[in-house]
Length: 262
Image (cartoon, rainbow, N blue to C red; front, side):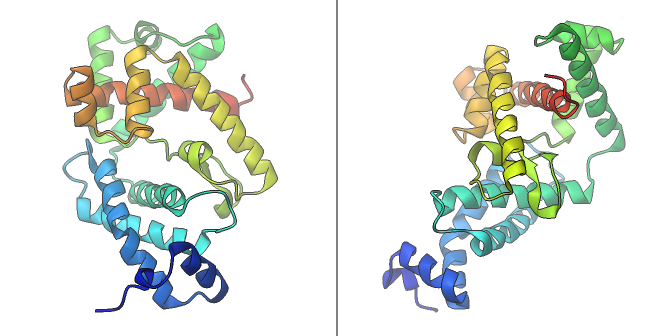
């Protein structure tokens, strides 16, 4: 069994050495040290997803994110490695899920339809819109609209890791990055990131109270959908639906920002 270098050195010392010499033994030490973090992030992503998504696959995707984090981490930045790694691990998992294109085309179309409705209506009214207004815009009755949200929430991934602003491959910016990632990007991308942060916080503050609580508990307090349901005394499936509605509002608002509609 390989010796654990963390028994002989502090983690900060090992980071200093690794950034100088890229010693594979130090890299392997970090991989073993943070392997549980990969499983933790994968389990959180897996929570509430369709049964067809395999947990072990998510762990595998997340491991690539951990390796990427180890290679790119800068000890001189005022960010703990664990915080930085969580962003990279989540991002790797969602990148792979997107690349496999496993969400049915019909569901993707429903997502686009609802986002377009929310985006258009909020640009017109200058305020958060109600479910009734969105349903009316889509020419649906209330029951049909609820079924649409249920369908989206049960089969799709709507996440703070979705990419919104990007230049080249290394300049991708997600909502989650804008909130908790270190500022290691180009100055113009950092400006865009700060705008995302401002918009996201503004949208979250305008959400209906339950949706707001769910976003905070899930994305900031790391509670699972089941745990949130227990806190709010509602079913896990209802939590999933409310989370989906909140994310559609956030995505629609950012769509307006990209179009220059403030």
